Structures are given as C-alpha cells and as structure tokens.
Image (cartoon, rainbow, N blue to C red; front, side, top):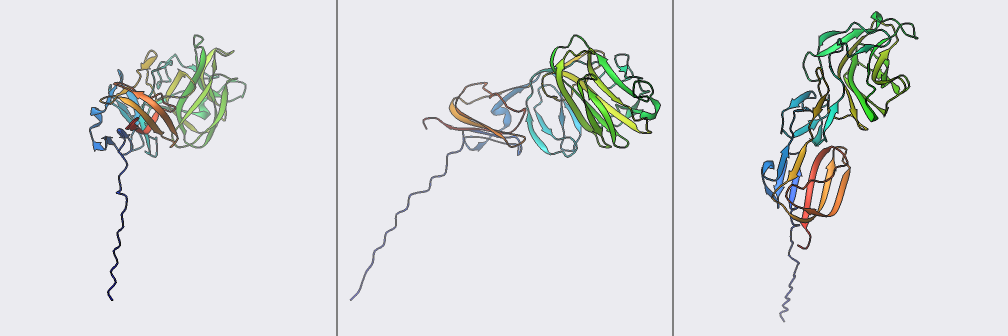
Length: 300
C-alpha cells in the first residue's frame, strides 16, 4: 500500500517596517526621506545671520561662517556632539581675549599680561601671566582680573578658557561673594559660573589667584552672557558682540507625525502627534541634536 502525505505550510508574508517619513542622522551625515537618501539641503532649510564657533573633529575650535550649519565636536577629544542649534546670545564683555585693555581691571593687582600664546582655536591669541609677579590684596600675594558692569541684571553666566604650566587653584565667577574655587591644569579647559546679577560688588567677571608661585596662567575667550549656561564662544573687540540665532526648519514635509529627537548625551525627547508643516522645527531640550526622526504619518 502506498501512503501519500500532502503537507502545506502557509506563512504570513514578511512586511518590512515602513521607513520613517524623515530621518536626519547628523552623526553619520545620513539623511533619508521615506527611506530614500536625499541631500540635507532638500529637507532642511537653515540660516544664521552671523558667524559662530564650533568644535572640529581634530579637537580644536573654529569659526563657521554665516548660514553654515555647525556639526559640533567636543574640544580636545574631537568626539561628535551633534548639529548645534543655539538661540541668539551676546558676549557682554569687550576685548574678550585682550586682557591688557583698560576694560580689564586688576584684582587686587593687575598682572603683567603678555600675548602670542597658543589658543584653543589654534591661533596665537591666548595671553599669559606669571603668578609670582603679582602683589597686593588681602591674601598678601594676589593677582587677577575683573570687569565692573552694573547695568547687567538677571541670571548671567561667566565663562573663560584656562590652562596653567602646573596645576593651580584659582577663584572664578562674578565677584568675591558669587564665585567658586577651580583647579586649572596644563590642559585647556572652559570654566563657567552662573549666578544672579547685579551683586554687591558691581562686578560681572572675576578671576584671581594668590599662590605667589612661579606658575604661568594662560587665558583666552572670556565671556559673560545672560542665561543659565555657557553657549559657544563669541569673540569681541572694543564692544560687546552678538551671535545670531540658528534658524532651522524642515521643508517638503507636512502632516501629523510622532517625532523622536536624540541629543548629544543620548537622552531623547519623544513628541507624539506633532503637526508638521513647512518650516517646522521642534523645541529642543538641549542644543546638540545627533538624530531627528519624523515617524510614519498618522492614519497610514
């Protein structure tokens, strides 16, 4: 007897997940609309009326021209941080890297500052002073710089780039009462301090040391701006200088979508049911965006 067996196996056809309506992967510089690679300029309009500073993959700072999107990297390591989108800001200090100018007063004795030193942007615009050459003040041997600015009010952030020929303790902030102890090392670091102005000493920027040691302090890029954090450096000359806002906007897409934004620290914002139209851009929790995904359109 012959047995015949007929086995039929029916499987559900695999359907790949639909590609997101838009993917902006700034880390990989890969941009897709409905899964198809596209030039970034075809899906993102961008403008900025002024130049602005960014970090390079080589670990230095550089200035990007107006209307140039900044793909920003961490100073020193060159690690990618994200596309940088900042609001407008103003450096309220004049002569932000020339501390010989009269706008910079001494604390308590103004150091003899000389220029021509290597700076974080690769230029020779940093300055230096030697701690053993300063005298005065309640500490006996003390020297530093400060700026008086009674017209500044509200939350303000002071920042500055510093390094030293040997590890050095300094005091940095707005004034004696609104400042903090910092340790300056032989590697460039950007220090920042935030507090409310005005203060009782009518100061907006203060940096000093009182070790009286044969140690060189290197300094560059001082900044005071309104707000609770230090934004990218704004170089100034004889007067305060503004950096224009980065102004991005999506183009060629409209509808209601779920949107996911991934930041430099890998945190995410997930926005449900966003109405996206020409020129739309999300409110950001952080200024560095590594990836933006506009998902499948609602109802499809």
